[in-house]
Length: 558
Image 1: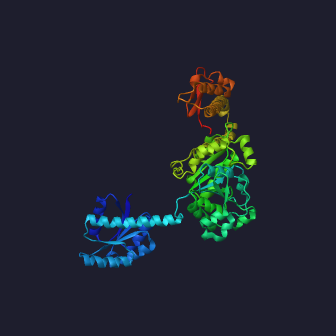
Image 2: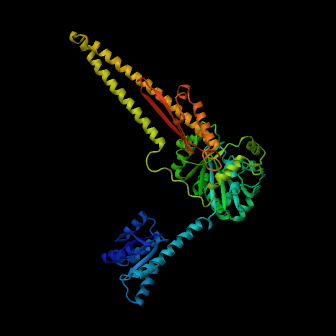
Image 3: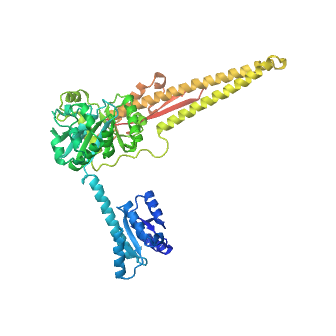
């Protein structure tokens, strides 16, 4: 790791000498060189990742010690090194004492060699790194326990159940499940626990939340978890504050290896604080348009209020079934976030476990799916959330922009046609009284009729091609669903020909009769990732046909 250094000196000799030293060293980089104290503070504001500031005692007309003192007060974790005019050990000792009085960590002589300069800078860089790490560890409660917040796009998408199953999937001896849905928390009902204490009881102690307080407030539930419940009286949730939430999150990070927080679907100060300070945030939605629009609104709201950047939020698609009309690709297009993982619909067995408060004891396909793909979202060593797409318009933005351009083109055409009609209107009276131009309308009428007929034919042809494209898209999606359900590879890793034949049959069944008859096996391409369909659209010109192609991505269930 390269250590960035800021140099403050009015001397060109010192600047050139230290510049050569940094150039020969692979561990230090001269980020900037300034000549006065004001410029030092400005450079530190612009580059907060600077680790060491080297201050010449001759800076600011000989007031270099005052510059060093101001730097120490502004950025106490930045290492300060003084450049002094000293040649003997006694002079270096006196210079070191003077430098330490203003907050410097070391001194170097103007004519110091490469080895001496690097040795002193490495010592100061080590001190700065240790100081920053110590402060960061203190802010994190001195422990690297992970906090995962689970939020719902709206009510009824399964946020609480998913939080419970995620905690169960990543359970250990020190896993805590927190119900921060203060007004409508129902984790106690799902776990079958009767409670007298709740998370609100910790609000009164705000900055003094300890491990003992957490243990006295939480309840053991089946599966090796501990539950910090929401208050049974929803109005008590108003006692919770943002400061109390911050203290509870810090205590959870210190006292537990994993804490899963159910924040519900509404946003207030305590839940916004939990979302802000959590290590990971999962946004749960279902494959229906109201929930997807709500998810998009939640991401925009969090971004506007500086609670959480959308690129740091992971999208979870819950209750997914092969019969869903809203595909995962459409989900990502609407919400403008990639899907982290999907959870299938639980069916009758899962509903029975929910109704009997035996979710933690009764295994269902949902449990298996969360244990298989959901646990990666809460594992400590899992990679950070994807940063989203690269710069440039997203697919949705491109579609909107294209729609706007087409709309603008139609408006422009309308204005141009209106202009023609206006000009024709002005010419009309002149022609009415002029016999030499009386036959002009007779000449223009066939041309106008021909143009109108051509436009109509093109429109009919366009409608036919669009119909073929829609049919190909629907058929490709049906084929992709078949591959996702049946699987493309067999146990030995080879292609399953029976699945390919089934996909082609499903594609043909999905196509209308006019297209089904002309689609051959070569027009249906099946792979493990995509299904492509090409249909032939007849035209009004004999011997000329158009083709419409569409592809659909395969999403494996479970």
